[in-house]
Length: 172
Image (cartoon, rainbow, N blue to C red; front, side, top):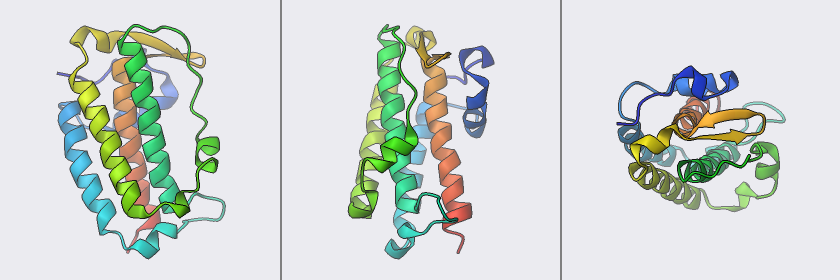
């Protein structure tokens, strides 16, 4: 079973995401949240997806797009590290990523499908990693991470932004 990483497997700034993830099977959690997050997202009225909780902040569609971007980025990193590639990868530039695509022009239903498909790819990838390969490490910028730490960071990142959507964007 894929278990929570030790603190030596990731950089301290990412602890907040790992702390969001409850104990238990990560793959089971990813499957559960694929369903429950998708149900929540679909329950939000279409007009609410353009909301910003403060000036200069992303709107809700951009947050969802960022969640998808991050999951794809983490998936690529997990793929490379679990297959033994050790070269350093750059950090994900989230602002640049969101600026390069017009999430407002993409129908929100398509973003729901995009989230579902990206999560399914993460689940399938995680289900097929050899147990010993989860401990492989790779360098991101100046930090070293294990593959399993990245899987947990990705899951926690989703939970973090889901919490923000529920408490800052969709408060009614």
